[in-house]
Image (tube, rainbow, N blue to C red; front, side, top):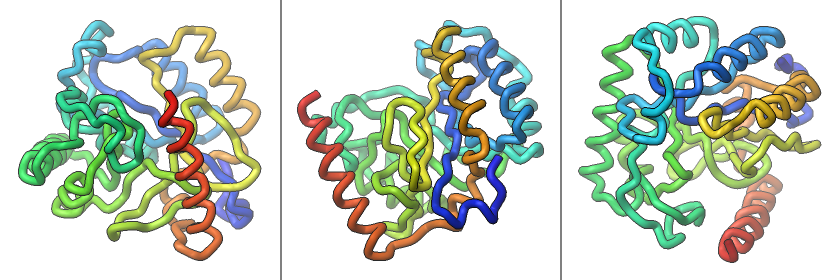
Length: 252
């Protein structure tokens, strides 16, 4: 894992794992744990506090899940809230904040409804003794009420967004997540999105090769937060990337 002195070059990557829940692909999760321990990587795990997604229920369950999560956090892994139940019940029609489109758990719901979900999710983490400082929504879909509800619940870090560097908007820190697969840019502080539940062994082997090759550039959540900036260069690259990626997504 990259040392703090190396990040001065503004090149680093957070390994973000999505859809971490009691029912998941534990075979690959165990392999991930061994891989991360090999290089002292401290990933960011998107934990679903109250999973009701039927796609994940087909995987084996670990009934000691919350003990495992607690152990991960105690070893320095960052635990992030990934939605509440991971059930999509609205259609964005590409009007969501980042323009991803598709269905959503949060977009289009009232502030009261979103606040209720986030509050209930955080209470579950609290009951399990898990500290949560960040959030990212299923399918990358947010609206302004999502941001307001997060702030109401003391969450001011989101692992999503455009740009080459972490930035601040609405008094929230955004750590950019740009690509569907692992890409190591020569410049920038980014986050991956890794979906173990949709991987096969061949996919995982490619991920392992990527980690073996780039482990020196992998950073933890706290180092990424230190790079939050709203200078002119950051704003220009954010604007350019946002416009370019939204145009590409509009044709999907």
